[in-house]
Length: 229
Image: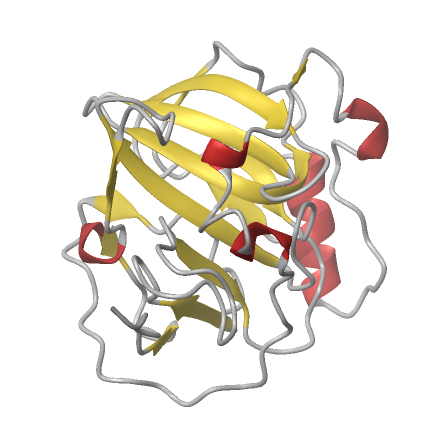
């Protein structure tokens, strides 16, 4: 059996065949199991303090853009099992049309009404460093420390992959969680960040994920939303 052929993945695939209302295998009851409940640190919010209180809005379908795709150093962190994904190329721009500036990552999410939990995968080989459950902002988060010496932050998870815990080693493409809309958002998506030096915003340096990710050709890339200087 394939290492990623888990009950939760099979459940997702059944959703592609027409099932509705499915929930990720880890389930809400397991979200706090062996997790660390941390205070909502404003420094870890996406954008500035004022923008952190603004929920992301649900996006309409958008046309493709001419944004260049990445060079493939990283596997796209959201499984592209059925297509239908959009990437907001908004690093250092606005989180949404009216959201906060200095967005420290990119948003990859559903470009349509499909809402079944989509598997999130390790973008590279590494170790799950920690999980953080917030009451707002990033929601349920998972941080992967890659063998390349960088940290990868996954935000807004609906649930964590069953059997994958902090301290576990994972390989590129392995399911580690499920896309959701926990925290300060109304859109089912993954907010994905890449950090050098430290995964803590006040100590590290955020890197633009888009040039690093190999995007499948059917992923819709949306032009960045610039911030006024």
